[in-house]
Length: 507
Image (cartoon, rainbow, N blue to C red; front, side, top):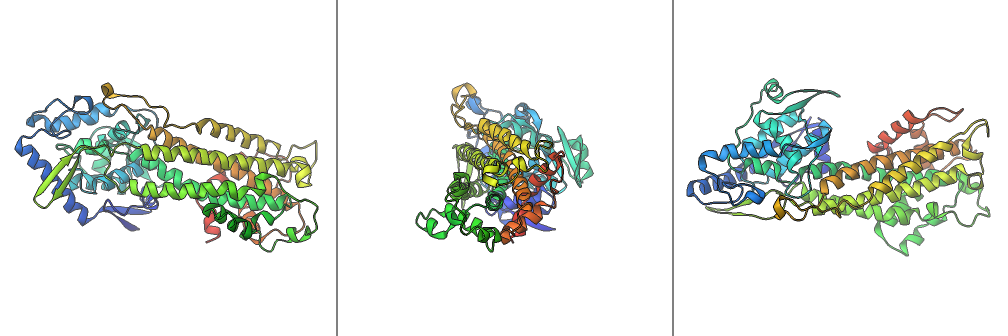
């Protein structure tokens, strides 16, 4: 296994997933260790001076004006974690908790949070040992940090709460002290500011956005593949993908989508056999697919830019800046997740659009007036329903996605006696976006199933790329020789797309 250096600067979404899945380990960089130690010395100097500084020797939020005595500072940090660990709802998947821990550790490793290196080392040791705190998903407002989820994440660091311990694909829930002891680890005694540094950040939002981004990047290629397969399945025109059309409107994403679709159609016997076909134009769901998919490609590029910055940022408050022998502790608002919240709203909308246009292509594949084949691609019309309900399920998924595409950012609720008067709701939005990508994968899987069934009934060979996709689909979904339940096959194909298998097909 390889090792990823956690340095607060170079972590990538791919690294987060690989570490969380146990494909590599993580360790704290020497440069981060030095910066963290320097910022910690600045905290110690404040404590020694008797100066009152928010987050170090005061209460929190609306209680920031309450000074805490020196003898109670460690108790203050423990009380902070305990009191804020009141989340509810479904428990986060253990791998998602590990992702959240990696991102939080990387934020602290930037060296401006005043936390000791020992704290990050314990977090990374837990991740490497596959020890995931049990974390209820609901509780963050996407501002002031993901307070409740990160507090549950932090309980095991002080020997409290419960953890899931991974062994292969299985997870066992045990008391945190037992999990740590079995791995040769010990709880840590939090010092001034460290509890606040752990929970005052955007790490839950980031974890879900890493998932949503990765899924959508895989599904964008799958969407273009689905267009090519479906186009061949209805014997549609290749003309709308002519590069001259797209160079005359040089939108980057549109050109990428058109080129990918066109490349998959290369050497198509289906197109050659219909050189003199009287069909002038196909429906928009085919003809305009690059113009629909293209903006999502551009959106995903921007989301990746935002997210790569965010997972390598210090997102707690206050921050500690050290220059030589001088230091300054400054309060700000880097914990606010508006950037992630708005990105998550965009992803949910993009997933809905990709799914909506995919469902329309399914309709065309099952309609004899467009496909030239039996209704619903049934083998025995009337006696069998064929793939009729595949479209129903896709339409149902689009309806679900329409419902959750409503923006999370518009639901602000002021909290903490009005001091925290604007929240992003980014945690809600980010989790919703992961759900949107799952639903999208299931719609595209249904389209591919219909397209491959239609292709099986056409004598001529499709384009080379389309044939590659058809062979891959047939690993998960057998031809429809008679009516049967397709749920397991649909979900298996969906999962394979989400795992990036299509990208592997084309290198």
